[in-house]
Image 1: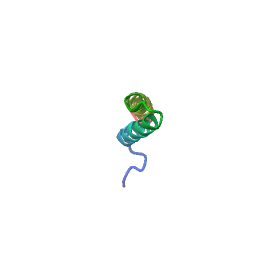
Image 2: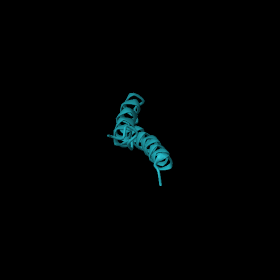
Image 3: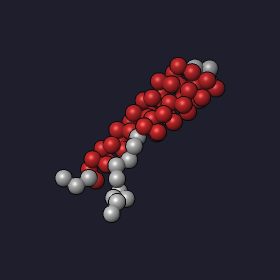
Image 4: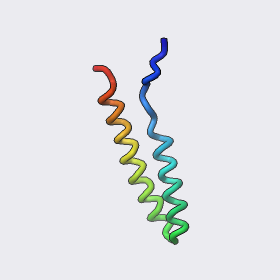
Length: 59
């Protein structure tokens, strides 16, 4: 039987945040700031997802 509540991967969310940040930054004329902001948001989301999975997993 497989475990349907396996760990989640935050890499996709991190990559999407970086790309969205770059697009928004480009629209506003500051692509580098957009990438940095997207990376920051992505890291926060990925760490939050990791912590949630860590607290859910049986010890």
